[in-house]
Length: 459
Ligand code: C2E
Ligand code: CA
Ligand code: CA
Image 1 (tube, rainbow, N blue to C red):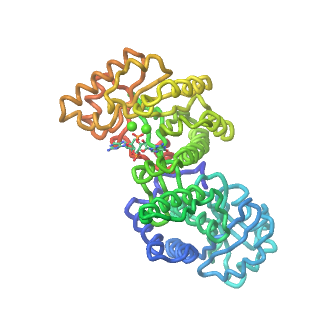
Image 2: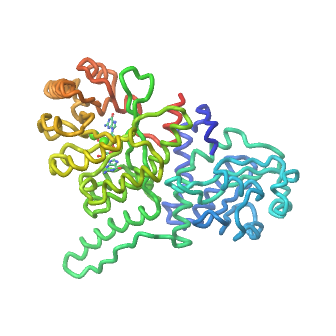
Image 3: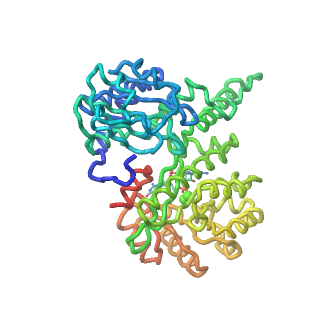
């Protein structure tokens, strides 16, 4: 991607983005195969990019060689001699785009030595230039394909053309990943195949479906992080972000946590989702901090079940050491009810992780109306005032009083208070008057994708 050269002017307007999204995903809804859907997507880009010809070159699992090619207006067999050759720097624009993980332009194929030996791909159609963008896996840890655009002119792509492809990167990534998983069979977490025996056959098979759908989604890396900015009083710099899981569902699109978290908890799969989202967020945000030259706090949600998992501490440590994410920027959010369920054991886990510099935050505070007093004994750095109180602050005197009291008590205990669900300037004004300094809510930003967060930071 053009990571050092993001230009906010070229963000695709939401309406156009939505129309494109619908057009690309329409054949999915119609039950077409993923190959057909990808072909249709290529055709979509060819239309959007003018007279271009596009090709999608699929990589093997180790990013070593191209194993498949999809194209709509070019003969796919022209790419045959690429298949199963090791990917290298001197391989048109597609080879280097995979190795360098960025946009690579070849504005004059005949003069470009990287194209020597591959001219046959373009000669018959008289194509003169090419540019390639790597398609990353949904968790961005590897390249799964190269998307290449050819033109009959000797030219470089415009910002706008690159933007069209980048705007749908997430969707493309998900579809390619699913295509690879179905065509080349790379499923790793075994599916549960229970045979329903009793009268509750129907109910059981429904459970099987939910369970297996989540397992398949995990295998295909379909759980990804969205990011919601957290803003501090002076609003000059972003204070932090909260990481929120989304399921990039191949048919339903982006699914909210309310549609899968409780099922995942029930099926004891939540820790896989937590881990996947956490790992991706660490990779994304470490890189983003380097790019925008700014650090900020990162809050992740941890399910009550997960924090009691015997390997919880080990897993957190291993993600931090694998990704190099600084522990002192990490904050773990745990709900008040989860904490109260098992105070003693959770306290032990907290104390051990605190030694690494990790902080803790109590989520949805106020919902269970429990005492703030016990927090004195725990290494808790901040509390998050539940959004339902903040939301009703303008209309409900009781909620207003709760907000006021919680903020005052937290201050007495020298803790930070984050007000969630700040949606209007009135909310902000009242909560500020009560002495709250840190805010989160739609008034500032909804949870957004990696790219959108970067625009937010650069703006
Ligand atoms: P939460 O931790 O309380 O997260 C805040 C939720 O409030 C998010 O919903 C966010 O989109 C929403 N929100 C933020 N600002 C506003 C606002 O101004 N108005 C309104 N009405 N809502 C606002 P989301 O993303 O749907 O997440 C819902 C819950 O799912 C989270 O609540 C959290 O408990 C859970 N969750 C999300 N991601 C994960 C995860 O990776 N692991 C686990 N275990 N749970 C997660
Ligand atoms: Ca939270
Ligand atoms: Ca919350």
